[in-house]
Length: 176
Length: 336
Image 1 (tube, rainbow over the protein chains, first blue to last red):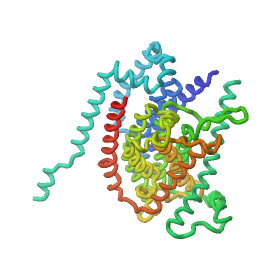
Image 2 (image 1 turned 90 degrees about the horizontal axis):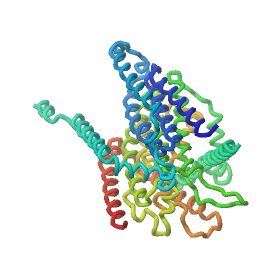
Image 3 (image 1 turned 60 degrees about the vertical axis):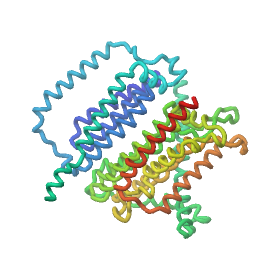
Image 4 (image 1 turned 30 degrees about the vertical axis):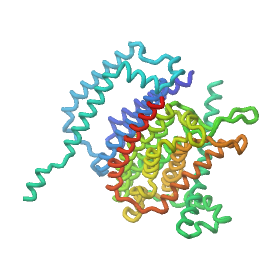
């Protein structure tokens, strides 16, 4: 058996197990911990598939930069409240969850039969390396989607600034 | 059979690296205590062995044999896991750090690194920042006020400096044209080839970020013994406590100093005056100087306030790195 096959199966098993943990842990801190574990395992999958850049960025951006904000918010919840479960949103969450399930099922069924045409040729990777291959294709063939994505991020940033801005008018009224 | 050979080779190498790092970290505690002592005009450890040379062994024995108290109200699993969460990623960074050139000894080719990825730098950065979960979860699992505040402070500091650190690294990366730590070193030849001459702004930001990330003094708000007892590790005792300073103050500082040497001081480049081992000696010499500099800062400066730290990160450090990236891009394009 090849080393990368063993690595692939162990990473994907652990990813699925920790994803189940995210859903079924009743303590939210444990859920977040499983989420971190899932993201790191997915990054391991990227490494076994030869996408080193994506794998490393997956850890840096998803497992650290984004989840740290979740942890920051969640860890301010006291321990006894973190354990409580509140089933009153169950009815609302069932149809939404089913919709998400359908979407994921479609993607996985579609992916099972699609051929992997998108990967770089090994000659290209040996010559210029993973990072240069990704960045070259990002700034030539996929320049427009890339710029649109950055525009969306800019809009989100402006929105966050507006939401976080202090209301000057309110302060003046309070003074009066 | 070849597969087993490869795995066995990697395992042996990793074990050597990990054990070496443990012993080194133990003696770095002595270096720090001696250095801090002399800065503050006291002798430091003196009585165990010649000038305190056996002090780390005595400390280790004490920490291991101490009663291991676990308070009743903590979340047991996370409480145990947090110290490992802080420790393991810090030591994992060693996998991508090259300590010198390849040498041939008795017919075997010895490589002083575990793996040379072409994204080594990003991976080092990622693993370095994963270890903050140890601090945050230690704060939460202790289920007590001071650790909680310590953990949250650490998270707030880290969010700011992680961004500045990432952008500060872009300058040297652009000049070398690679993420691989080995190739970055090879791009800096000669005394004036070192990137410190071309990237002073990036270096200053990087220095601040190292101090913030390892929780050393101008930024040690997560411990702040005058305000928070001992910060996030207040409830810990014995070896579970010992792992936190070992990971943060020694291993993380050591590894980040190694990255600073690789990025800004030409890594193991230097005159070949020490025979076949000269690349290792140069690397460790530069590493020692950077490490000592960090200790010097730690033991002389007072502490910033939390809001001042985050303000500095977002309002000074981040814009500085943007200016640096812009200037570097300009120069790289003009020089071709």
